[in-house]
Length: 119
Image (tube, rainbow, N blue to C red; front, side, top):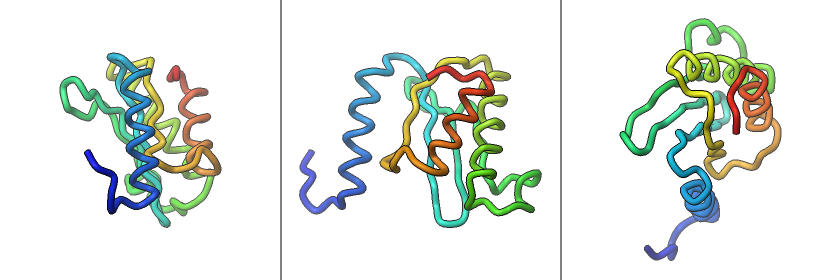
């Protein structure tokens, strides 16, 4: 597929997903999306095309705090790891979704690792 007309962000996301498919062979992926106000994380089984676990700063327990800081990202990382472990998933591939591994994305990943996910 041609990358003509794609933004740099879309190209970076596509490169990242291609590398994940090669490395992740059969593992679910922990996908992260970061917006200006919130952060979202999902554990996705691409083979079956379904979401196994998810967490975000829009959930009732987290909604009262700001979703645009490292503390909120850490909380979301812990929550998604706990939900994935309850679903029987312990190993995932980290999909940063074209975002740089820095700040909130890094905090989410480190919290998920501390809570028991391996990637």
